[in-house]
Structure formats: C-alpha cells, structure tokens
Length: 595
Image (cartoon, rainbow, N blue to C red; front, side, top):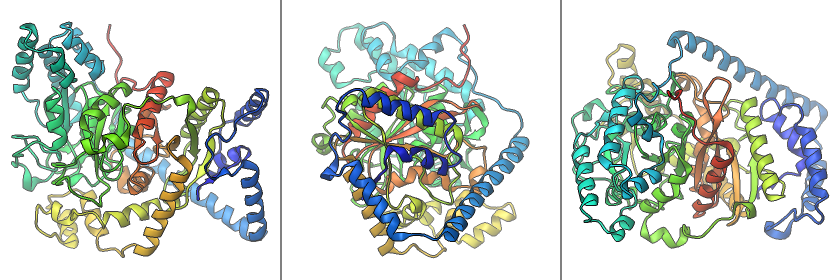
C-alpha cells in the first residue's frame, strides 16, 4: 500500500529530503490548519480509498514503530550514514559545478528575437492555427519566421540534424492560396486543427525522405522511407514539418550528444545540458525555433529535456499513442515502456496535440472530452525518492514544492497530502530490469545491426578511434554487469503500481520532483547519472506524467515539477498543467525580448 503521512510529518520529511524547507514553512502549516479548522466540518478525506482515516493511519504507524523498536545506537549510525551520504553528494556536486564551469567557460544564452516578424514565434500553436484560419496571419509568414529563427539559434544550440526544409514554404504558400480562394470549409478546418503550423520531431522518429541517423556515424546517410505514425497524424492535422532534431546514440542517454552531430546546448546556458533523448526538440522549442515538437520517452526522454529547457512535455499512458516508426518500433509491441508525446511552450497546446495523436482504440478509455474540475481533485506529493544514488533535493526545489502544495491547498480547501510509494528507493534498478524486457536490443541498435564488444569500443575510445561517445560505451558495459533479480524486481514493481493506483484512483494527482537539481553542465551525467530515476519510475509504472516548467532558479535555469496520474487519466495531468501555467507563468523565454 501507499503510505499517506499525517500533515504533521511534513516538516521532518522535507528535512530528510536534503536540508529541510526554509524557515516559516512550519508556521504556515500551523496557520493553514487553524484556517481550515475554522471553515467548519472539513472533508479531509474526500474520496479516501478503503475508508482509512488519518487517525487510523497514524495509530497504525505508531503501533508499527513500537513493534520495531529500533535501538538508539542503530538509529544513530543510520542517521550518521545518511548525513555522510548527503555530504558526499554535495561535495561531488560542488567540485563538478566548479570544475566544469571553469572548463566550459562563460555563460551564453540563446539569441533574442531579432525582428518583428519573429515575435509571432512565441505564440502557442493553437493561437497560430486560429490566426491562420481567420486570415490574420499567412502560413507562409509563420513558416518563414520559424525557419529564420531556427537558422539563427542553431549556431549556438546545435540542435538540428536535417533541415530546415525549404519545401515547407511551398506547402505553406499552397495553404494560403486555398484559404484565400475559399476552397477550405469549416469542416476542413475542423479536420485540420493545426493547419499551417510548423513542427519538428527528433531524428529517431522517421520522417519520409529525411535523414534518420539515430546519432550514428554508420547511418549518416540513411533516410526514412515512410512517416512515423505520429508524424503522419500531425501532417493530416495540417501541421508542417520543418526539421528533425538531435538525439544521443539510439536515444539512450540523458544528454543529446553523439559523434555525428555533436552535443546540443541548453538555450538558457549553452554550457549546460539540454537533456536527452529529445534534447534537440526541447532546445528548439524553448528558443522559439519551432511551433511545437514530438518526442518519445522510455526513461524520461520527453520530460528530462522539457525540464532542462523549461517547456511542457507529456509522457502519456503506455499505448495511448501508436509508436510505429519511432526508433524502429512497429507500434504492435505489447510489453514496452516506450511512448510518444507532445512537447511545447504552452500548456494549452498539450491537449489539442494529444487528441490528434491518440490511438482511436484508446479514446474511450482516456475520456479526453470529459471536463476536469481541478478544485475537486485530490492531491498528493512525495518529497524525495529516497534513492541513495540520487542527489539530495536542493532547497530551491523544496521551496517550489512547498509553494505548489500551498497553492493547491488553498485552491481546494484540502491538505495536499504527503505520501510515499514502496520501491521508489530502487527506481534505478527497476528501470534497468525492465529495459532488459524491451523488444529492442541496444547493442545491436548501436552497432546498426552488428554486435559490439564493449571492451574493444572502450579501448578504441581511449585511443581516440571510437565512433561512439563515452555514454554509449557506458551502456554497452552495463550489459555485462550482473542482471537484476527478476522475481524481486517484478514483485517490487507490482507493489509500487498497486500502491499508486490505490492512492490516486481516478481523481487523484501526484506532484513529484522532476530532479533534485536543475540542468547540469555538459558531461556531469558521466560522473553522476542517477537523477534520471526521478523520471524513469513512471516509465516502469506505465502511468501518465506531465513535465511542467515552474520559473527559474537563482542561476537562471528552469525549475519544474512532474504531474502524475493513474493509468488512462492523462486528462488530469493536462488540466493541472494548465492550472499551474495560469498561476506560476509556465515557460520563461531564455532571452530578453527586444522592443
């Protein structure tokens, strides 16, 4: 079962997650409880699963603690080791930040919008489509503005693999002519909700006639013969593809770097990682070089780049979107963590794009046309995944979680309950195990069909002769390490999945940290890589999760939060994302606007 903590434990839990909340938080909780108690009979357990009250749960926990009766000496050593581990994490993080910051030089950001024509590039995809339909904007002007912007920012971001596609201008011009001549009816506009809006997708997702390299030198000239299903659907909806974007080799790393294109830079600080594997997409979207993008996610590949680059990204329920054409998928895989999903600057674009992409067989289960009242949902949060290999959650991330929970407490009149899930402390192991159950063979994908010898590739790397990055070689070596024990991993997954489903039901939402810290410098994950487990646990559980930007930290890097719901409850994630955008502002431009 999930554990839902009494609100009185929130302070101590926050401290355990890596340093505690700021002063004044405890006072707020006290005054908030006083305020809510004056409202009369407070429905503290609306929709509680199993009818268990807070009093019952607190009593049960006290009995459980009494039955264990840990020795004072044992508790002392456990706390000492935990404190020592936090100190080691902070020390390594400090050294890496200083060393890599010195090595990579001065901070640089994405260039500002350079002309009045490019100002439209900040608009949402839905707004652009509306303006094109109403003849207030021409599709040709929109596409040209994005192409010009892409050429301008790619010099510093290095995010484009193939493109921009100049034939997109001809396609846009044809759309303008049809609108001007009245050839398109309201029915046509309804069938094509994104008519004339430019979009991009990652290189690993096939686009007919365009490069399909997967970041491999051995595939540098390979082109796709057909569109991936998600690309086909967006084209049918009227959107215009203008480029494909950079990925790590065969998508398996948290940075977008390969030996063919190089590394993609973060538009907020080009010394820092854009994330992976949809890093090229996130960088282009954040820098206003595309209307929106399509990503894929097997271990955070939509949400890590969305977090690093301060945009929205939705990882759907597994099976909601057909993945045919995404990294050689057939779309018929039954046991997989892979999903495709939308990435964009504005939360209001998420649902309209998602509706275009959803598999018709899933539409009924997802209930996307059902209105969501965010004031009537139940909310939970988890302060840390308690995984020793992850960094401790830093103070700015903790403060963000506090602000968010306080807002939804005030919005609903209910406490946002602190919770925990069994198994999150082994999130990395769970994901590693389930990756071995995926139909794709990473070794063969990396070798473009041939098996690679990790030791040979490592030796070649040392000699400067390898075609692969160190990250790819790490993954090859990982394949030689002892496998996770299947019975233990499957049992832990089942317990965690059942606990989450019981906690959330069909009206619950979980707030979960995106990462203990904001986007790291390039190469940082080669030393400390496990923070991705904050994302990958929801791939293991096959549930929907939306990455939401939540302003910038003291270094000017994007903060964010994951919004999680039960299977097929994607609509809850997307509705809460829109509410967060309204209250906290959403995407923040990585450049200063010029008047």
